[in-house]
Image (cartoon, rainbow, N blue to C red):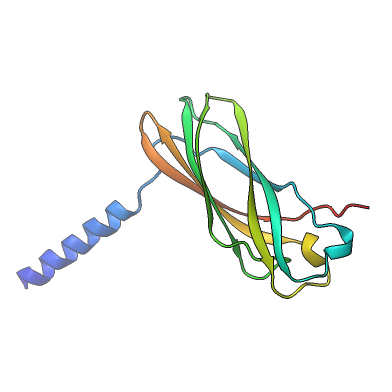
Length: 149
């Protein structure tokens, strides 16, 4: 009986410690797709090059340092984005907004009716350091390119 009580207490302690919160208010994160696929190629399958901008607004009262941005597509969309990670050392003062831009590769397996410039749902995981400790912010956002022409 004591063994079962000990295991229950251990389980509850593990659950409590796994639900950690950010040591400071989490920043606001916005993802934009900056690149487009040329109109002549929007319904082709294959590899594509993508450019993104991640904009971060620091709502905390302390400076945050962006350490990494991880992206991957979720579900079906205009293209697939394999897990992508980029490292940064961008300091964001309290109340400021900063952006990072980067290129990565995607793949169109089966073109949709909207083509390669159609919507895609992307999960963004941004890692930060703060004087109160490290944390990650996770957002899921739908992006799409505005076709040229």
